[in-house]
Structure formats: structure tokens, C-alpha cells
Image (cartoon, rainbow, N blue to C red; front, side):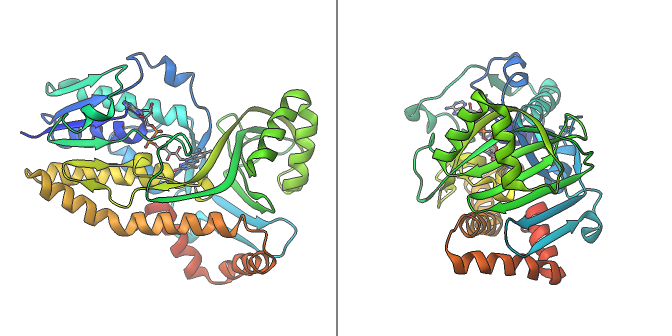
Length: 375
Ligand SMILES: Cc1cc2nc3c(=O)[nH]c(=O)nc-3n(C[C@H](O)[C@H](O)[C@H](O)COP(=O)(O)OP(=O)(O)OC[C@H]3O[C@@H](n4cnc5c(N)ncnc54)[C@H](O)[C@@H]3O)c2cc1C
């Protein structure tokens, strides 16, 4: 029986272990998790809202890993501040119950961890090493297959072969408005970058905020929030406009630096990379976790289908090529065109948004890619 080591107990590493054990309960797995056994650190951890696609929802349902508090998106309104052009995507056009869900990072992390705790109860060959950080030299020799799921945030990672610094940072948090919003997500492109307002677990008057801008402006906004919250609300209102109502309160604001950092090769010998350890992307299209879960699911399928490690990893590498390339390239393209200040690019993106609204098949195919990946 092959021995499998998974390094990293984030959502992607945990989901990968769950999908393997769900298919082969006797699989021999060592999972190295930096966190303690108690779930407290997760519950009190990262509260940023993540857009989880319908495709990921279906995959997570297989292992019963779905948080209760996850408002659905039925409609997405995409617009461009100060320019013509907008696009609306509705769930009916895709014949789906929802286009996606907004889930807090902490909630989805916890839901997958609890699913693995349940699935692994009868798996005597599964060992969960808590509070473990494996150093570089040990990693290679851990097992017959070493799965890198260390994840991480842009700028905290080592540079990979595909690297682009967009000089962007995002403020995330919540905003309370004077309107009731039901299942509606807003993506507005501003001169500084994308600004998204997404359904919130806090209730229908609340929206999750992802406000991208240059790093200096972002730091100034956070400082302003601490000194004078009314002033940041006014600035946000000016950037977003009044489509979503009047902003009356905001909270839990924090910032993240954004960029693209991806490996060219996701398999090397008996080592394999999934999730953010394989690629970290700009959140403009809400794809990082979704792509990572598709990595983890495909890897679990390949590992459980072949006894030979090299055959399993070769299949995994081949199966992930198109989806990975398409998602990384599309996200990079969107991040670049929607952060450019060049006039021809600004005109072209307004035109692209209007065309998208008219060219229904193109819009549907783009949305399908974001929801389910390349299949
Ligand atoms: C502002 C922002 C908004 C985002 N919005 C979206 C969105 O809307 N939709 C979407 O799909 N994605 C989104 N993402 C991306 C998403 O957060 C990541 O793609 C996802 O968290 C990757 O999961 P992961 O498990 O690969 O890595 P992580 O979440 O980084 O987890 C990795 C885990 O491994 C642990 N670890 C690291 N090194 C070691 C080691 N040596 N030993 C043991 N453990 C280790 C870490 O402590 C961590 O717990 C967003 C990202 C940002 C920054």
C-alpha cells in the first residue's frame, strides 16, 4: 500500500484527504496540520467572505462538508464606474439553483475539517499530526506520494515561475446598507480595481466587501477606518455609487496583497502541488479556492484509481492542464484589463461588458468555466 503525506491542513489539503478516505477508508495517509486539534483557532480565524462556485458546492456535498451559513447568489451585476457597459448573469440562464454561495473562510475551513474528522473515524491507517510544520529537507522523504497543500498568501510565498505583481491590495470586511439585498452580487470595476459587494451571512442588509486598490491607498483607507469610520463609508459610497443603497456601517476590515504566483509544473517525481501551493491568483474572478478544490478532487480520484504512483500523478497532471491554464489565464487577463489606466483599454473593457450582455453564448460559457472549470 502506498504511503501518502499531505502537508497543510487548509481547506484544500483537508478536502483532498477526505475524498481519498471516502473512496478508500483504509488508505495510508499522514496529514500534517499546523493548527492544534481544537477547532477554536479556526472558528476565531479568517472571516473574509469567499465566493464558492456551484461546482465546488457539489464536490463538497459528496463529503458532507457544507457550512449552514452560506447565502446563495442568484444574480450577478457587473458594471464599470463612470463608463458605459454592464452585464447581468442570472441563475436561470445557466439552469442552476444558484450561481454560487458566499461562505466565510473560517466556516468552510471548519466544515471540511469536521467532515474529515467524521470520515476518518474508521480509518486506522490515517494519522492527523497536529501543530506540525515540516521543514523543507524532511518533506521529500515523508512518503511514497508527497502532496503539497501549504497554501499561503501572495508575497508570503516563495516566487514561482509564473509571477505577476499587480500592485494591488484588497480590503475585505462587511458593509451595512439601508436596503434589503437578496441573493444579489455586485462586481463594479473602478479606476483603481474591482470592487465587489456580495451577500453576507450577517443578514439581508449586509454585504461582504472586497475593495481592490493600490497598496498605498488601501493602507490609507484602513488607517482612515480606524480614525474616522464615517469618512471611509463616504469614500466607499463615492467609489461604488448608490446602486446598492446607502452605506451606513462597516466592520471587520483587513487587507490582503494580491498577485499571481503559480508553478509551471505541478508534479515532480513523487511530489505534487494543489491549491494555493500550486497557484495563488487575484480574487477578481473568485477562483482560488474553487480551482484548488478541483485540484484536490482530481488528485484524490487519480490516487485512488492507480496503484502505481507515477501513473496516478501523470494522469493528475494531464487532467489538470486545461482547467488550470484556462483559469489562471482568464483571471490574469481580467486582473490586468480591469486595473489598467490606459484609455484604449478602459474603452475596450466597457465595450466588452456590453458585448457580453448581447452575446449570451459567450457570457454563458465564461460563467460555466467559473462555476465548474474546464471539464
Ligand atoms: C482577499 C481574498 C479573497 C479571495 N476570494 C476568493 C473567492 O471569492 N473565491 C475563491 O475561490 N477563492 C478566493 N480567494 C482565494 C482562497 O482564499 C485560496 O485560494 C484558498 O484559501 C486556498 O486554500 P489552500 O488550502 O490551498 O491554502 P490556505 O487556505 O492558505 O491553507 C493552507 C494551510 O496550510 C498550512 N501550512 C502551511 N505550511 C505548512 C507546513 N509546512 N506544514 C503544515 N501546514 C502548513 C497553513 O497554515 C494553512 O492552514 C481569495 C483570496 C483572498 C486573499
